[in-house]
Length: 254
Figure (spheres, rainbow, N blue to C red):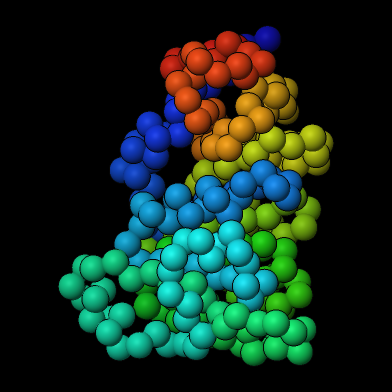
């Protein structure tokens, strides 16, 4: 059985390298069960981008709120935002009003639908959609998200989507992703679908997932290209963290 090529890297080392590699128009899918730190990882990834629209389909997600972005309760953003973009200064928003009742959800959905269309028209944004299954189903934005994922590459718009299982979201969310960040999971369907999409044997994905540490910032990053190595990130140097496998900075067995 051939040995999969997996590069073990600390989270900080990975971020330093990934910042140069992640090009405008390339998408990321972050997949993990509840409580595995998807929103926390999202916030660190958004630090790598200059123009960000972080969608909050819950209308008040506490973890996402820690990003410190001002909340945009309407679309379009104020004119000063576009002035800053013209000067190449950072512009980052949490998109959607904060809501306290279910009756307010239609207003939240309306603002986010306008912002999705606006991001596509403006070009250059990085669009982050937390809890994609909520945005797609309960907010009725599945078609708009699908279109954005499929068409945004040519307009320099990157989409970072977060969800628990591929079965719960539009297929484009993981099919169009240049990288898939996979957290520790026991869901067989997630592993099988991921292997099919990226063209890798199921045993490779399963073995690599088994090498994840039960700690924050331990993720398997799978490029949507079977010729490129996967990356297993760890919060400390790989040789100091038990992973259930011999992960090194080069080709490794897991």
